[in-house]
Image 1 (cartoon, rainbow, N blue to C red):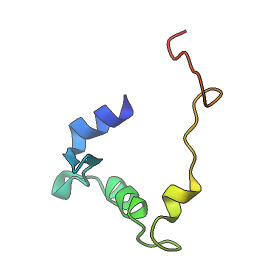
Image 2 (image 1 turned 180 degrees about the vertical axis):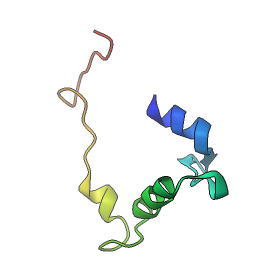
Image 3 (image 1 turned 120 degrees about the vertical axis):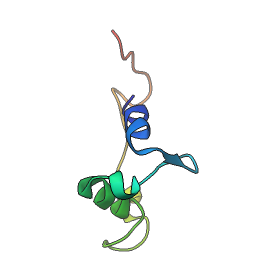
Length: 64
């Protein structure tokens, strides 16, 4: 759901959330820079350091 909210606000480019150009917040532009590897320990460090898990990571009944 959050992806859809952010896509509605900032738009999409090549199946990724857009930075938002001039209408994007400073915070969102910085998050996008981190996502793209700027200002960190090299390209991809953020993606390699996070893990997406909901519930037990296998089966999650979101609405129950």
